Length: 167
Image (tube, rainbow, N blue to C red; front, side, top):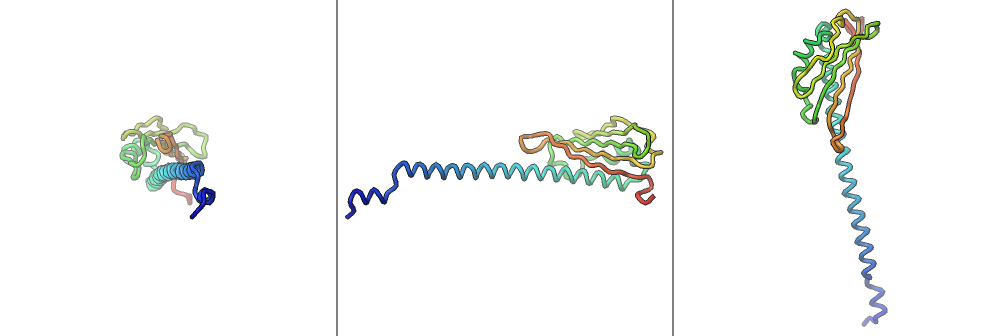
């Protein structure tokens, strides 16, 4: 038979049990918080990857087009920006801005097109881009993303030369 002193040494007190439960609750709470943060980071990375894919597809499309097409804002609006880029359905409030700037010359006038809500508008148009030997293409994608529906922007810049790189 155990005496009263020995029984007390082998059992947990109420205070020890409360402390152990509190530590367990803190651990589980931090684990859930870390999980939520990780999921937001994964969602943000996925959205940035989609935006980068859109930019890459758009610039590659510009590289495939001939010089007359690349420098004509009406052709770009009617044939290139007439549809959403593949993969863009995963981004909220997506808008694209294409800016064409003469490169390597003294001209400063630009051509700019914007696509938002399924329609494309020509903001500014430089009719003399066709006579330039190279243009700087700046493509910007804006969207609302994680975390907390913040505005995000991705941008790429490419230089396209008349006649290709070798000339």
